[in-house]
View 1 (cartoon, rainbow, N blue to C red):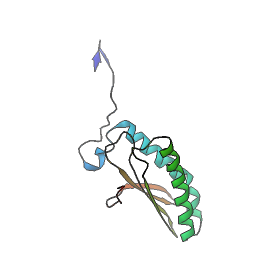
View 2: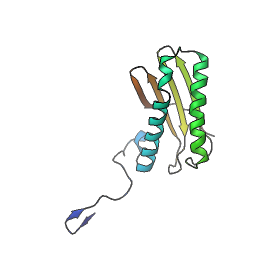
View 3: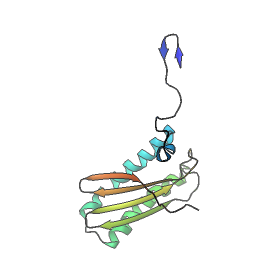
View 4: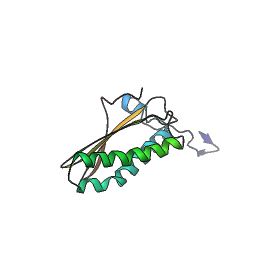
Length: 132
């Protein structure tokens, strides 16, 4: 929008349009919310990459992430109170699968976080479990 020779940016839509993956993140509040969740979980679970990759480690990380998402659900951040957290710990890191539906999003979002000693990598999940 131009007003008297000045440009103003309005709206909450990103440039991430045109593909199926980016469609969910086309709204800026949804994108920011997902980035905040990723950042919080990546920071909070960083300790896990220095632990032995046992089944107990997977349960501990899963419990930690579930507690965080439960607090977000209690605050009304999700469209429904259902969300999925799956965790797999291995010798070289931890993989965390997340499925949730932000309040401002029409569809659930599924993400996979791969936490290793070199950092956290995030990818979309092709065959995520359904919230229903």
